[in-house]
Length: 161
Image: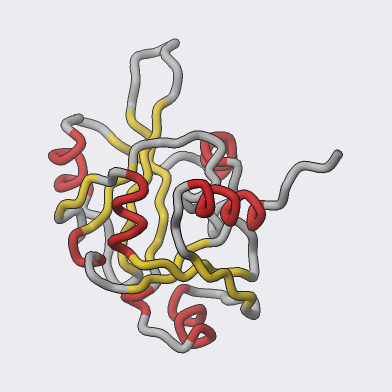
């Protein structure tokens, strides 16, 4: 038996959470801006799903979280640290990101992640329909941001610069 594809995991997780998503195939993109053109949307409507490592004591299990950031914005580390209540956060290596989520960078999404890490969503994405990674290169998932936030019990805060 073969393991389900990333896209299949995303669709199964969305269905289990009662989320209405639309997964669309698109040509490969070299940048977020190019992906926005291919999807005929604005860059701000693409939400980057960043897996972020929480620093834990030596020998303790690794802990992560998802930070959902609109494509036209950058993460504010100071704001995110304040909301999470920690002194140190970082982006993991591509190998650790894959280990933490089951997804390669560029396809990462909380939907279908191999581990259900806490989700933090930037307040600027509230109220719109967004596109995000669909667990597999060449695909994007469209979803209502508010429904996604509710399905994950996400913390909504100003976490961008």
